[in-house]
Amino acid sequence: MKKVTLKVITVLALSVLTANTFAAVGGKEAKHDVKVSINAHSLVGISSSKPLELKPEAPVVAGDGLNFNTESATNNTIWLNYSSIVEKSANSISVSMDGDELPEGVTIEVVAGSDAGKGMGTVGQSSKEAVVLNLKAQTLISEIKNCYTGKGDGAGHQLTYSLKMKPSTENYKALTSGSFNTTILYTITEN
View (cartoon, rainbow, N blue to C red):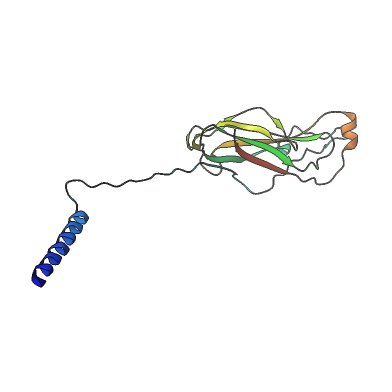
């Protein structure tokens, strides 16, 4: 009886070993599941961290006023870059000014140009109109879907900043000399 029991145990053990070996080696087909995940994301950046300086041109002839329509009162060296994968709708980028330390009647305007075409996907549409910056967030780029613009200078949307003053006696009276600092904030959000 002992020999028969030992033979049965040996046969069972060999059967299990053979089955496991066969499963590991495979047959005519083998398969397994793969999960692919693409994360939704929204990133916005600018091509430079250097501060801009905007200033009107001082008069050179007695009797003239400050000139806000000069090269020194505009700047177009900054580019807006972004990446986006949306879940359902679209993203937009808004712009605001963090702090309002400008002299009375003096404003900063920004215009975003068309996308430079250095990325891929459905990049957003710029308003192409000047946005007068203030503490309230205002849409600058809309309808951003799955895309990226490329990074750095020459990619994304070129930003043009202009220093303006509403012409009035009261605004001119309120001007003072000095430096006035503010921060421009860009925010990307899903609509």
